[in-house]
Length: 273
Image 1: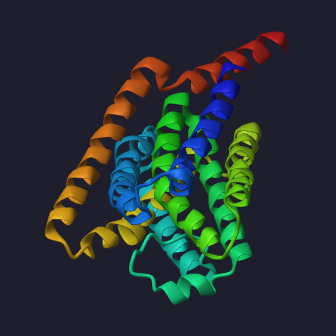
Image 2: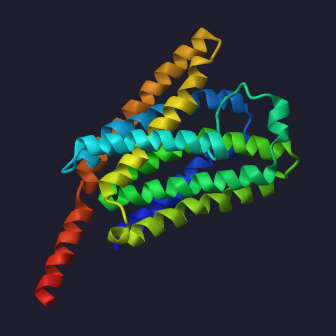
Image 3: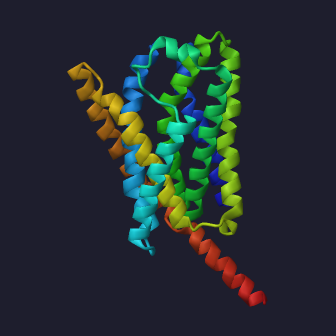
């Protein structure tokens, strides 16, 4: 029951935090571009650290390393093909022309954001199946990634004439998809047709793809050397922050509480039989 509460609180908290950048865009005085210049590299570092420091080691523990690596590669390619064909994943590219932005339909932005949030929820739920600590780290990385994305979504909807209140309401409802997906995956648990290491490997491939193809290129495209250097430092800060969070989470929350709970339940069922 405690793990259920932690899962729901983490998913809700992650969803609210991810909207922070967009809310600031609505009511703050700092421009969206300045905010994204800091949020984007931090998100890249957070995603990479979550993938390489937490998810992949957990996936490879007691599993075939070659199989896990293959799943990461296949996941990377699948997300690439999805982006090319369906455009589900939002880009953070600042060089997108103003005309192209205005041509994008508001409903498509909302649908795309909801699908993206749903996929994020799947990743959170799969991580909580392994352990609460891994779930917390994954949630933090996803929230960091969602902040710059939501800034772009808020800006697009505002540019199409949507009222601030409606923009906030629509994005709050869209964020609920994360919680729904996380709860659904966690509830299914052992009934899922794939193992937990596979789910973690898919999540890691998702994180690496977003960081490598969608976020880091925007840093390389920064024309001002001073800004690019600052972004590089922020990216490293993102890696260090999630790396430290991973260590603390596994130390104080516990790395295998869920597995121990499953063992206890199995033993309890055996005694009853």
